[in-house]
Amino acid sequence: MRILSLETSTEYCSIALWQDGDIIDRCEHVGQRHSELIMEIMSDLLEEAGVTLVQLNGIAYGAGPGSFTGVRIACGITQGLALGANLPVVGVCTLQALAQAAGFDKVIAALDARMGEIYHAAYEKRSGVWVMVCEPNLCMPHQAPRISGNGWFGAGSGFAMHGEVLEHRYAGQIIASYPQAIPQAGAIAELAVPFFAAGQGMDASHATPVYLRDKVALKTSER
Image 1 (cartoon, rainbow, N blue to C red):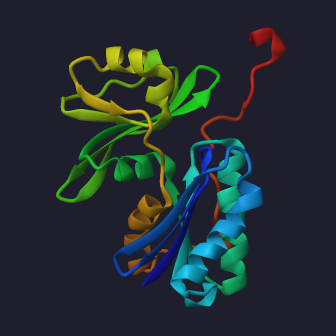
Image 2 (cartoon, rainbow, N blue to C red):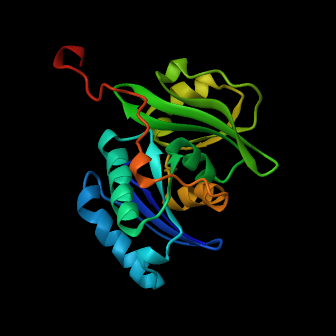
């Protein structure tokens, strides 16, 4: 099975190709230039692998939450590629991808949502399967949902921007935090593979981003 995956919800552009358990990927810091560079990065990766779109079994994408523009780019590119090659698609939550990429079994995933807020979720891996302990939500760091137990690891830019507040919120529960962790296309692919294998890929026309916020900027009077 071959799965192409795209992740553009942060300032990084991440592309990966999953081939029967082996992954080759590219991840570049592009700021806000995803739309300019994503096709070039993807083409280079596929050319190196000697794989064309028609040889794929599906395309996975980071559905959000994250940058409003970024998640739309991943979704839109996925739709275009999949419709052209008649491929199924799977959308994966970026927060779960963040947990997958972190390399631990108990992860509090937090992405900076700007405006003083974070995108937040918590996942625990049980018998090799991720269980959602706290569903994705948008919140102020000091109001992040309570989570039981200890041995948690924090991951994501939410800890880079609000680490002190979050570590106080989960005092005694977080072992360590990795603020530099980002959602990665390789993790998106790994999480999507079981859905493709079970025939649960969806038609590209049904691919949609996940937004937890409608408002994307503060008014001048609110700053």
